[in-house]
Every structure is written in C-alpha cells, then in structure tokens.
Length: 413
Image (cartoon, rainbow, N blue to C red; front, side, top):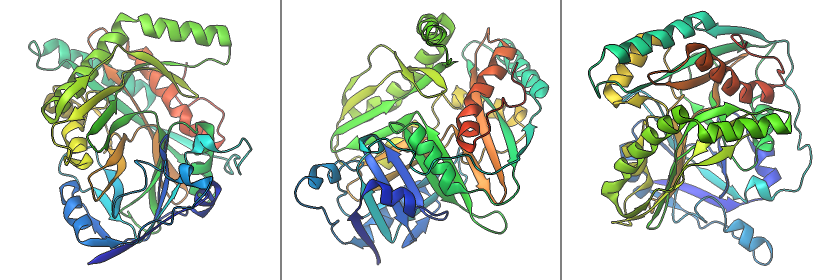
C-alpha cells in the first residue's frame, strides 16, 4: 500500500520549488507539483490499480479568501490520490506514470499579478543541429505527398511529419528557468515538465508549453479541444490580424481541421450521451494562430476514467494523420528519429477518474547540456513542402524564445 500527501500552496512557491525529477503541470484550472514516487507504472491501463492501492491525506484547503482559489486547482481539490506523467507517441512503448509521494496544488497562473517572476535567457552560446536537415525535411514532405497520391481512396489522407532541432549549450540546461520562462510567457496555456526514464547519467525531462487539450473529465462532463491549421503571428498588428483572418478563411486549413475534429468526435461518441461540436474559432499563442474547436460532452457513465478517454483519443490526426495505421507507417518510413514522448500526452488522473491530458507538442526533451526540440505539420494532398518547412520553423520558436535564442531555426526563409 502506497501513501500520498496532498496540500495547497501559493503559486510562486510551486514554480520556485520545481526541480528536475519532479512533475509540474499548469492549466487554466490550476497548477500542480508532484514530488517523489510512491509508485510507478509504464502502462496507462494500470493507473487505476495503482491509485486504488494508494492512501492519501486530505489536502489542507485554507479558510477565508484563499479558499475559492485553492478549490480551482485542476479539476478541483482531488478526490483521493492522483497519478501524473507522460505517454509516448508509439503504441506499446513504455509510459512514465507516477503516483507522487507529495502533491501540491495552487491557483491558475493567470491569477498571478504581473512581474518578471525570475524570467530570463538561459546562458549560451548554443549550437544548433537540424534533424533532418531542412532540405531533407522538404524531401520528406514530397515523399509523403507521393505516398498519398499513390494510395487508393481513403487509404492515406493525411500524414503529420515532424523535425527535430538539437541544441547544445555550455553547461547543464537550467530546466527550472526554462519552465518559468514558458509558464509566464503564456499563463493561460498548458505548461509542463515531466521526469522521463534516464538515458545515461543525470535526469531527463520533457518540458513544454502546449496549446492543445487532448481531454479533460470532471464528473460526467468531458471536454476536448483539438487544434489543426496554423499561421505564424506577426509583431505588426495589422499583419497579425490579416494572417488570422486568412487562416480562418483558408479552405486547406479548414479541411485539415475538420479531419481532426471529426476523428475526435467519433472517438468520444461511444462514451457520450450528448456531444456538442461547434464551428472552429481562432486561438492564439505568443507565436502562432490556430484553428480551434472546443468539443464538449456528457458521459453515459460518469465513472469512465480520464485515462480511458485519453487512450481512446491518442493519437489524433493532428499529430499522426489518418487513417492512423497508414499514417504511422509513413512517419516511421520518413522521419529519421524516434519521437519518444513528443506528440504523446502529459496529464494527471485522480482516484475518481477525473483528470486532464494535454497533447505533448511545443516541447523538448532535456538531458545534461542538450535539448531536442520538436515541431511538425500536417501534410495533405496539395500541401506546399516549403510552406510546411516554414510552419515547423514557426512552431520551434516557442522553445527557442523561452531559451532566449532570438534567431530563426535552420530552414527559415
């Protein structure tokens, strides 16, 4: 039998307390920090058994004015123990799910007063190496387009191709500072840092700021917010607005978005009594505009765990393609690296099955003095290979700016 301690804390305390080896997740619902490991599993399907074998202390919810903020932690104050961690892109690859010895909750980042909050560039200089090289990524897009053209109708409709950027600095990467930079750059987004299995000496961490909610479940209510179709932001307000309007009216991007939304809705429909799928809207981050659809539903069985819903949805066509098996095969044939936990998911679930899972994009794997940054884009018939390369460059800037690297990645026109 494992045991977990739970308490609430001030927001600044959580970011200051984060160290590699811990787990951190921030969303619009609140912030949590997990320390230590009372139990672990490498299978998402086993998380329910782990939680049933774990006891917990009730969190210390303060009285008075602080109480409402504390109750708005992710999903509310948890009912019993919780587990959190990361699941990989590849089917059958081991996950990293932990029942922490201690869980600390805080209000959402967006409720914090303004300030620099210890933000600042990480020490350089940095060397960059693109994997694959930009020209090879363009060739990979062309290869994916040929595979789609040669396939029968419906056999391969979309492939999401990614590229990686290896950055190496003068010393160990300050993951805590990188996390703070990401968190305060977009307080309303999903910011995370998850401990990963080591690949040599020292800790290995998945850190990022994702704009995309895979699924959240609270009682009988379920929400998914797929994103597909994007355009880079501009510092010029007029140009920025024009890009947003063009994205919303783009037939190519709206088709790409519709493919993803339809797949998410179909995956949720067997679990839901009602399902609402509205028209797409614009959603913005600091670096990109996205087409966004917030899908909401009412579960047939309120005991359906969030982990089961996450497994049913992962991977969506936004990060893999469609049909899934054919898209996975194309990715394996074209991409020259293992995605690992990139385009997987990070999140948490409590003993009641409530939880929140986020698509692990706009992220990097950090180990020692190096980071592997990742970015991808959806390839459909008619895609422009050079435009797809530019899209990945825009997405890489989320992590580059958080590092303090204000220069375009290789392959930027």
